[in-house]
Length: 299
Image 1: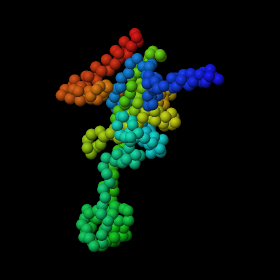
Image 2: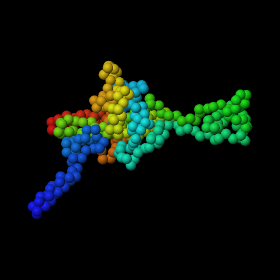
Image 3: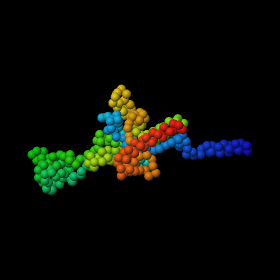
Image 4: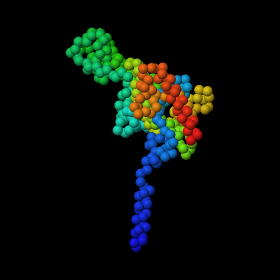
């Protein structure tokens, strides 16, 4: 009996030993490739600026199938339910769907005072009546805005309505990806973690960030809509691809914005006194990463 208990006890100890947490076996929950830490010889995180209106990238921005259109439609329909405020991609820092959609308005709607029958109105004044905005066309007092001719002293106006960002103005994306060299498969992987949508604000004359999306969510949407998520092949439309495959094949051009560093500084911030040098630094970093990949093949 004692021998049996001893065997059982040893078995429990062995199982508990196997069940111990091993950080080297961890995989990134945002990764598409699920490469464990112990198989990573080299890893660096890179941020890239991806302009959809560049000639090489037009396949991602075909009219009617613009990539931002597909993503925002997915957000509206609830297929993507988490929009992150920053590139941490943490659930503690998210926009609600309504907050995100509100950010797409570059000019909020004006709110006019309700029409008052005792107020004197002059031409150009605006008021709200029964949920509709009106503009005064003739000076008056007490004339109901929706009165028929000849008492039509008002006309319906669209002035002050919210201006929404058009899809054609959402031509800047920011890609955050991990470059990982897998020693077991002896190859380099570009593991995209998230994409930030930027839009051009015509009134402020600058780009405004709308929100970060996990690439795993984006890739799932692309696969679920092969009829819409199309990368357009400008040379041969018989060889159009799903957008997920286009990313996998790296059919885009995106310049390096930042390479992981302790201060989390972009190349523009590092070389802020010399714009020309900061532009050249993007190419230098690209060449350095290519050289690193070349050297890893000799590992």
